[in-house]
Amino acid sequence: MQKPDISIAGMVVLEKNGAKLKFASNASQFDTKIETVSLTDKRLADVWGNEIYRLLLNARKRELSGKYKFLLKKE
Image 1 (cartoon, rainbow, N blue to C red):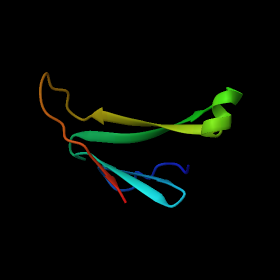
Image 2 (image 1 turned 90 degrees about the vertical axis):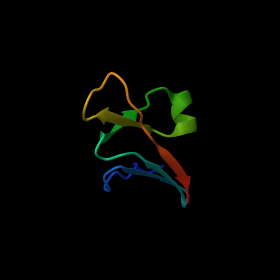
Image 3 (image 1 turned 45 degrees about the horizontal axis):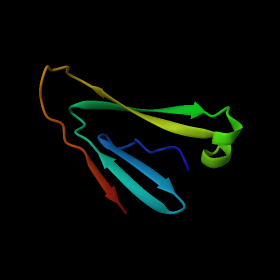
Image 4 (image 1 turned 90 degrees about the horizontal axis):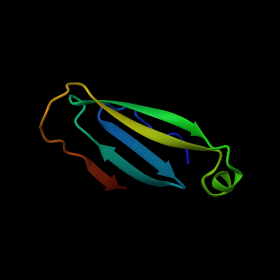
């Protein structure tokens, strides 16, 4: 798997073997970051590869209540 693409605000594109999955969120509500996690356990690395990625969505404004909407779309 290649590193997720976050070049478009509010959109994360995951791609593997030509298949794409898009994850959409409200760009005005969240800052999006990707962390690379190196796998040191050989058993995990044999299945997942040497790296996996963590998706971080940090709310721009912290509220006690509210609603968030996310969309997953396979392409």
